[in-house]
Length: 234
Length: 71
Image (tube, rainbow over all chains, first blue to last red; front, side):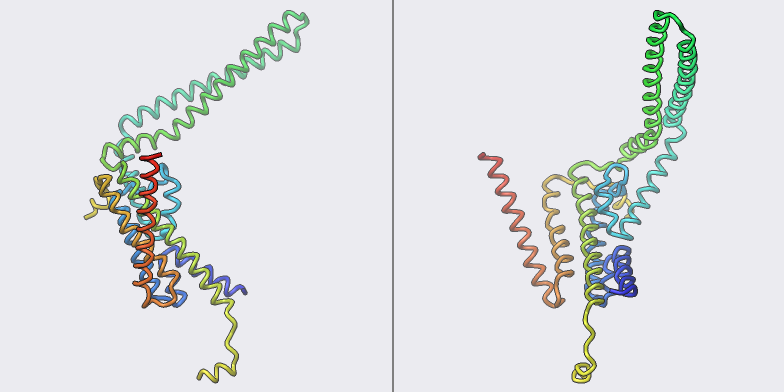
């Protein structure tokens, strides 16, 4: 398969992903292309109609999200709608309790970093004392002190990491709560049906993408008809 | 109209069970569209695959119900 045929297959795949059925239409099968476009689109949007805007959810349903993204333009449009809805909800809550919790966490982080600096200074001082200490009793006491400070430093570091993660998840938690409050959250069995419909639509399109690639490969590897036979056929 | 694609529907478990039929129809149509060489034979092949899938799912359901009930 030469470079031109490679491009041919790649273009068929990209088209098949972007607009379901376009890969087949590009490979000279327009009827199949139209059927695939209608069926993948109908299945995907049936899922979104049942589950609402939160059917495509990158944060909470990553595996379903992955399969939904194979539906190309349908998946991208649904994802954009979900993002716009989350942004709208986040804007609504950013002035209230979210801001308060965010400030509390940032204050806590500032205090912890200040404590960590204190630990570092204390450790440096204890190490200096250790170098100048002569008596075995004094060295033992300093070693115990160093271990205690090291333990506290480790605890502070873990708490800083925890606070950082909490800060990162804060927006998501508040948006999730706002989604529930707005009546947009998915619950069983609607959640299952909606995810399965939209996800299966994406997986069906994945099969079509692969088939479009195979059509391109077969087309590229097909032996050219000899000139004599061409004359016979004419 | 946009509310339809924004808010989730309130489905019961019984209704959700029936929704396997259009899903199977969709899968069989797309699969046979990809596989078939002759588009004119598509409705027959789709009907065959659809029946095959439904019978298979019902058989699986009955078998699981029997295991759950009598094992």
